[in-house]
Length: 251
Image (cartoon, rainbow, N blue to C red; front, top):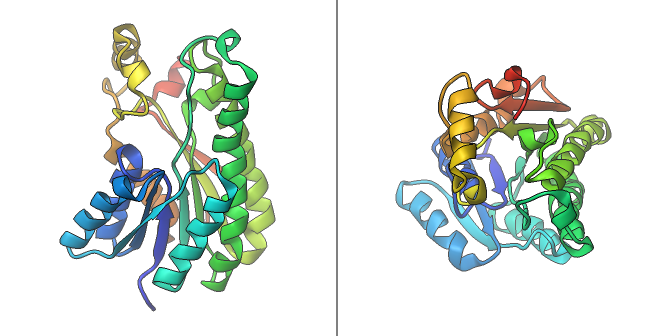
């Protein structure tokens, strides 16, 4: 059997990059994707320099035609598709929901929810052709609790969690597993607004049972698990990876 192929959106940095590097080490051929090929190519080249196989593809998840192009180029380049990791997301507003206008609301929902649904359906025939496979969404514990700072983003992640359950039913007959990981606060540029808020950082560090923030590698390992054979009997699940924060009652 040839090496499996995984697409990872938003993989030029942060969680996505950590997942791309880890999955390459575990034998996957990796399609590194971000809005521009210029930001994705250095990650792909670093993987190739370590002996892995990687291909960079530009894809803005808010543009449906680019989602189609991402799937097509991945299959054209590597000849198959075994897993899709939907890591790219948008959150342009840090503050209460009365600061979110319709344009920002639509952008969050389109990029975080519709694009994931659409990408899963575009990938479906190729995953089926490979004998089934895995779809993994990167959700957030913001989708599990109410909050005053990233509420609409949290709404989109709650919708993603329901999307996981729906897709698990719709795609399961083709042998495709659909799951998500819901991280707590992770040290990434995407979470910069939260990380720049000293009160929030102190809260997470003192409230999280493991007494630290997550590193991108912490989440990458869960993603790799959900893509691999060890999670072969899991589908429709949202795995909370938050250092135990959710058992304290939220944030």
